[in-house]
Image 1 (cartoon, one colour):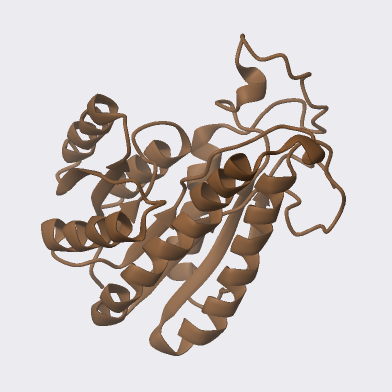
Image 2 (image 1 turned 30 degrees about the horizontal axis):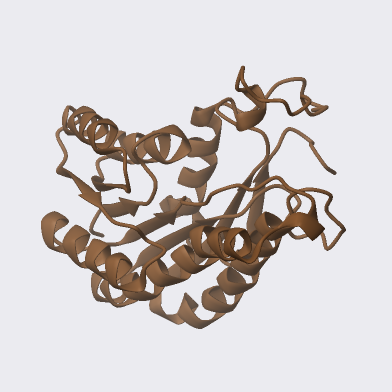
Length: 243
């Protein structure tokens, strides 16, 4: 199998941790960024210390033409593509009735539409590789259809990602491509743990947030050869939050 991966939103945070973990496992990796040029290039350099090929690519993946260019360049620079991790997604915390049209569209574009654009463009490359892994990011409890106080647009987008993933998984299983969802809860880099945040700290049964390495490890489970028979599934990394 060819080991070529594209991880969106990988200049920092969860995406960076996943991309570097893949590099440590022998994957050539494309680091994607929108504005964080320096951070993406630094991560790229770190990946190359593992003896793999790495490239930093800029794109606004809320634009279908830029998402297409990103995928095409990643496949060209790496010599193919077999793994796509869709990690991009902005958060909005605001009472539902106060969300503006522009804010609603922005959250849907950033989370759901970006995942759709990148994935649709990548599928032909994964088919050509003879096997593939797609891991899309939702969030903890997005599959629970319950009312939300301040993050409705975000949860709508993430629930849409789950439905899209399940539909695609059923279609692509014949092509040896699995499609799964990773749903983190609160991570060590989440906004709740920002010193400038006014949000109250959530009550986590595990008494701590997830580390970036724990989320990367869970993502690797879906990508690993041992997960060949697992598709259309949602794996939460939430320490028991929102159960």
